[in-house]
Length: 185
Image (cartoon, rainbow, N blue to C red):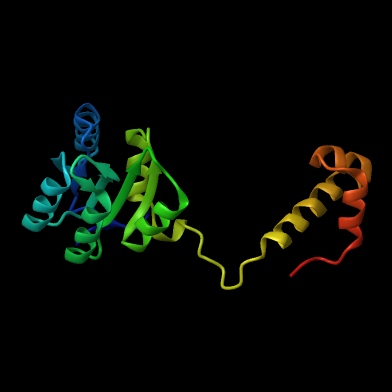
């Protein structure tokens, strides 16, 4: 297998499944990805996408989250079951954090908000896995993040309480109380 080390993709298997019920978008994206040397299979529904995966699971997939006959997460789940090394990307115009987390848990490599152009989609498909930040074992609390942000602005303002309070849009006395306390954990 030939592999491009710079982006970690297999140059021999450039099979790509695109599942989207927006026909003009589907045809434009199909043409754009074929121009980038992908062998594209286009599907307009969950049923067509699942059928295409059962016939020949692709190395890559771009799947719309909301389709006329169901949820694109069903397609990504089937793809990861049949081909664990596949890189699937979920596209949606209805983005929220819970859906993004679910998509990643089901095996999506990335999650892009619509309207996404062909360059964004291509870059997401070929991105190296290690480009993504790893989840820290002990992430900072929201209070700690807020406190550190306030401290950074305070230092950037030359430790001027009035200027810092103005830039943070908070009352000067409130800022003084925060600055007098210890850092939260």
